[in-house]
Figure 1 (cartoon, rainbow, N blue to C red):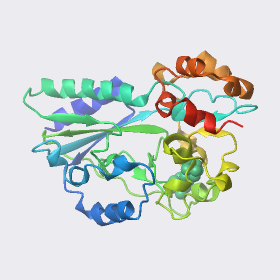
Figure 2 (tube, protein in one colour):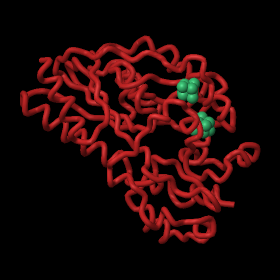
Figure 3 (cartoon, protein in one colour):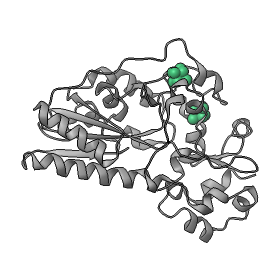
Length: 301
Ligand code: SF4
Ligand code: SF4
């Protein structure tokens, strides 16, 4: 089984994932009281999908019957070049290129195809932000990173600019050791957050987070927070940019995540003049397209 585990991890790296770890499937009941309280007090703001599939999240074997192992993979999106911020509106680095859901789902399917070569009857299902699994909890349990005070998964030798993918499987494999917290006395992310969304370490105050306000929220951005966006119109990377572990971030090598020439060269006046057809053309296949033209335009001023 150890041979197979190592083969799966090597294949994950060959496919383009930067880290891969394995956890033993177990109940996540210990998260129940925190998570149900979070939902009860509407901590998830307008993201109603976070209320769904609760039992499945706590018990992965309800998703994949007989699930024995959880494979967590990370995929680097730290860009080789930052889009110039002078005289520009700012979008999060994760949104420079193609929609990661599409890229990651394809690669997870490839990894599952490889796993099935070892035993065609195995069950395995991949997830990227799908809502039916607690991806961050599994990333920590599988040893690929810990959930930092900024609530993101951080890898000690590579930082936090990663997408997370998870595979639930009934294959039994020796688990990797879980990762422990290495934030220590650092509080860079808490001090740097412009809206106070991290005032309670390890807990994101979603309604105050610029990423939520500019990507997910369907409401107008509250006046008192608007001025704190500082030209951020889609997401926010501040609490990652200041994290000392991101000194170790290395540029990704995934062509799909590179910004187009047009996006690289947009400046404020171009964003303001952008029409719906322009938007559809420039952001075809991009995560920005998911939020839509109107939501993006809200932040332009
Ligand atoms: S993404 Fe921006 S607004 Fe949200 S917690 Fe991080 S620094 Fe604060
Ligand atoms: S900035 Fe510091 S406290 Fe925040 S996540 Fe990174 S290491 Fe942890």
